[in-house]
Length: 255
Ligand SMILES: [Fe+2]
Image (cartoon, rainbow, N blue to C red; front, side, top):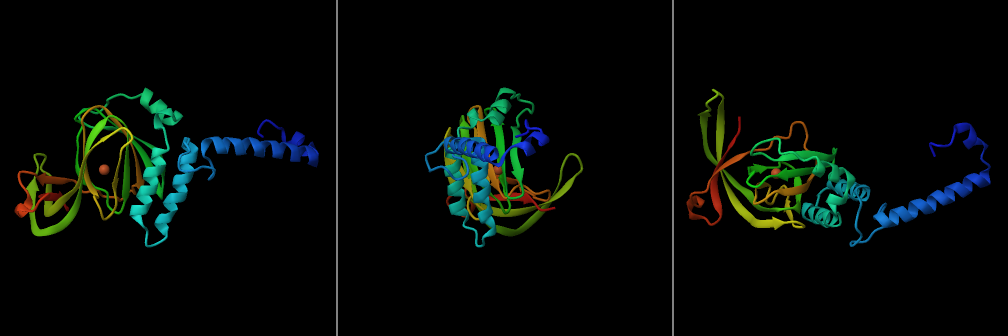
C-alpha cells in the first residue's frame, strides 16, 4: 500500500478499493495457510518465523492465567519448536553463516526475540564448551537442539542446608556460600530435534555439555528481567549426599 500516493488512494472508487481489499485478503489468506499463520495451522504444519512467534506469543499469555500449568505450557512450546526448521529461517540462517567462535571455552549466544512474556535465544557451542549447573529462577525453559549432540542434566533443589561459609577469591572478592542438596532428575544425550524442558518446580537447575559443535534454540518464559539473578552451583560429585541416589551436595553464592 506504500506505493500508492495518498492523493491517488483517495481517488480510488469504493468499488476499486473493495476489489483491491478482496485481492489482498485472498493473497494474505493463502500466505497464512502456507505458513501456518494466524491460527491457520494444525499440529503438523511447518511454521515460518512469524507464525512461530505469533503462536508463541499467544501461548505465553497463559502464564497470566493463574495457576499457570507450566507442564502443559512447556509441552505446547516443545511441539511448536518441533514444527520449525530453524536453519531455514532467514534470521537464523544469517547468524549461522556469520558464526565465529569469539569466546574461548564459552558459548556464543544471540537473542532472536525478546518481550516481557518470553524470549527466544540461540546458542552455539563448540565441543566441550560446558555450561555448569545454574538455575532459571521463576522461569520455564524449553531447550531445542537444532544440530549437534549434547548432554543435558537437570536437577531439583531438594533443600538448603543449615550451613554457609565465606570464601575469599584471588581477586580479593569475598562471597558467602550456601550449602544445599540437589537431585538429578534428568540425564540425557540430546541430538538434533530433541528437546529438554525445565519448569520452576522441576529440573530448574541444569548443566549442558556439548559433545560436538551444537546449535540450540531456547524459549524462556517469562524473559530474563534486569534483576533476574541466576544461581551458579558448584557440585560435589564425588559421591551421593548421605548415600541418597542421584543427590549431591552443592553450594551457591548468596551474597
Ligand atoms: Fe540454562
